[in-house]
Length: 231
View 1 (cartoon, rainbow, N blue to C red):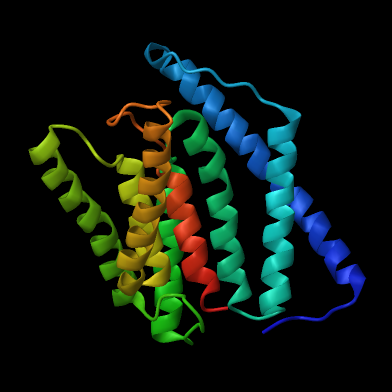
View 2: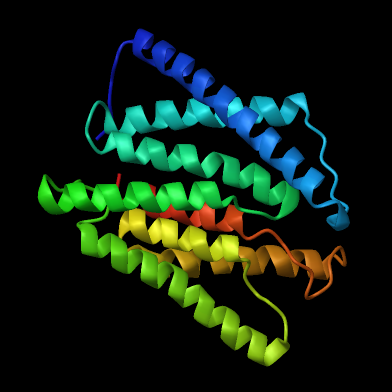
């Protein structure tokens, strides 16, 4: 569904996006600086720039406007906006320090379980949202369990860790939000994007074969493709 509304609606959405963008920008910069301060042995560096902050604001505004444009004032617009809101800091934090905050993953799982309960006992959301509480629970188990199995097999072969635990928990978050059926396509699509990205850098001789690359952005991209496939 595409919403056609007066311009003042979008002006209000821009203001809402700016408010949420300020909150996200503050969280991103605070989390990264605190992590670096608490883990000096990793020798990480981070510089807060106006460009990064503006990009956070723009993505927040886009999340508001795109959600409303496609979904209007409907019930499903609320969880989709929350989902997009949670994805934005993952991009900046994982790229900067290769960490996906537990707060985001656990909050996403909690919201997913709440949505599952609503779908189970009140009314079902349309689109990609979980169809019930058990669907969310199985989604968490599959989302976290499948990559853990992949990590174990990969470690047996290479003696190296292939996934970060933040990526594992994030797949659990996606499973809670969308149900177990979404886990495999999201993991498959993100693995393709991540592999292409990694190979390009290996061929460009900018990274070694086993050098760690942030996988969170590819999970985000795959989740977005999965989400908007249903809208």
